[in-house]
Length: 296
Ligand SMILES: [Ca+2]
Ligand SMILES: [Ca+2]
Image (tube, rainbow, N blue to C red):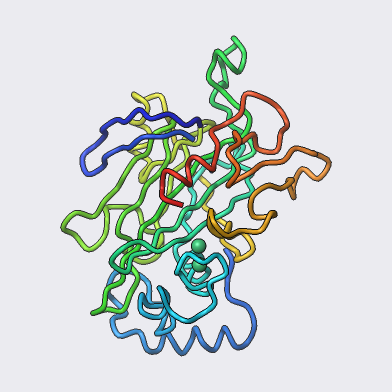
């Protein structure tokens, strides 16, 4: 949905901010062996969060000597490993139109934290479903720039990366789920507490919530979630957008790999409204503005 600057407060334990608005595994025998060795060395298997080994720590990842293609001070390998480990799981209805071509970005935060942004890049928004006055009056649009932002911190005692804060886009604003005085925010975690969270997509409109109940209460009760399908957001290294200052042309604008006959181009760093490669208007909010809002 679109980019505006109207804030709202919502829900206990959840603030909301401003703005408008969208898995893979290691390959090769070397990667497999490394992962197995690291798991064996996990110093705190029952602690919250995810252990990624001695090669993925703030000291090893941030302002070090390892390759950093997008020059944001976070090493390439750490960007990829953290994005894959924390790729959120989407929960939605199989009957909904949720096809998408996601991208992601990663950058360091102060204090050894890392921010991950998953840009869902949904092809369709069906928010005007049932409204017969046309897409503009009904508030619908082509392309849905829903976004999930995850901030991670590193626990030096457990040597785990742990979810510090989750931010889910919802109708042009953001539901913010901080952790306050607990080890991790109150989320739905499909695997490990403090690991990658689940996000419930509202039927047709695709606003994101941390639970089915919160979704059904969302947008003054007009939102509804009927999840029967669960799928993690794609997080292959090739989907990394780089940084605003350093990226290849293909990391900014490009054509769809799904609608191969469409000549429509969508952009992530150039400010352009996102239309889901439909080549039609009205479109959803520009991803460049979303990235900028979150400091990318
Ligand atoms: Ca980097
Ligand atoms: Ca980066």
